[in-house]
Amino acid sequence: MKKGIKIAGISIISLALACLLGLIITGAQIGWGPFASLYSWDKEVNPIAEKYDASERQGEIIFYGASNFRLWPEMEEDLSEYKVQNHAFGGSTDKLLVEYADKLLYPYNPSIVFFQTGSNDYVSLSGTDEEKVKACMEYKKQMFDTFHEKCPNAKFVVMSGLLLPGRSEYRELTQMVNDELEKYCNSKDYMYFVDSEDMTYQNGEYREDLFIKDGIHLNHTGQLLWRDEYIKPALDRVIKENNLSNVMR
Image 1 (cartoon, one colour):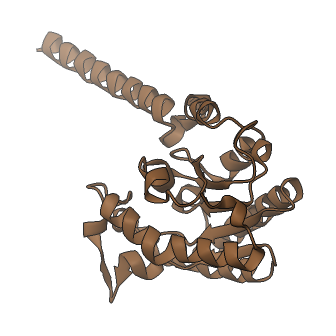
Image 2: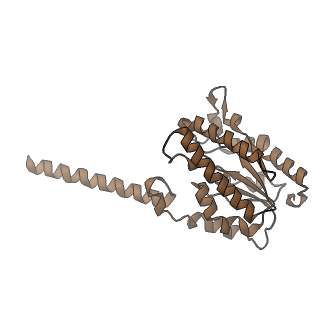
Image 3: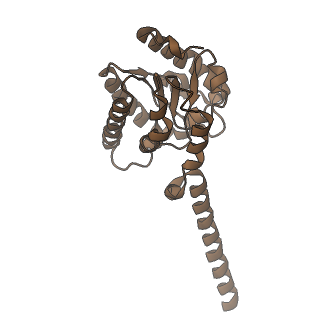
């Protein structure tokens, strides 16, 4: 009997260790969870810098942000009338966008930068929603100030955080951040805010048909709607108001 209990105990411990090892490996591979710090973001960043030659691709439109940009492989084709570069990398936070700007942003001297940052920044924060919004916005302001200092001639277009069915528990928090972000953008003559909350959440219901199964990332139908109703109108406005015909093909 004691032998059986001992074997069972060893099996449970082995299973627990195997699960922990799996979590560590997964976190290190995809930048997820408490082991995200083990992840080498260079695996995602270096191919972007290699794809777009900074010596040849100057003064264009850069899309910079997280996975809803990164997981849009047809972006350049879908926006073919513009000179577009997709520099997004999955799981990125504002901190990481700043960290890799020396490689992915500044060398390109962009005319327009589209930013898509959202729930990756505050899902790990603690405190009340008000405290999370304050902390999130303090860092965003520092980030945009830094980017403007390094890219003084660029216009920034900031997309609102999408309301995600897969992260429905953060809907109100996302809306609070969006409200503060819009106020901040309106206070800067080089910034534009694009409110796309209604695209994915209407009349108390999520548009789940616009997402892949995880309810976090847009499918191609969602990406095209995002493009047609929000991104292209913003692009055309910025180009017209600032005479940026150089970003057109």
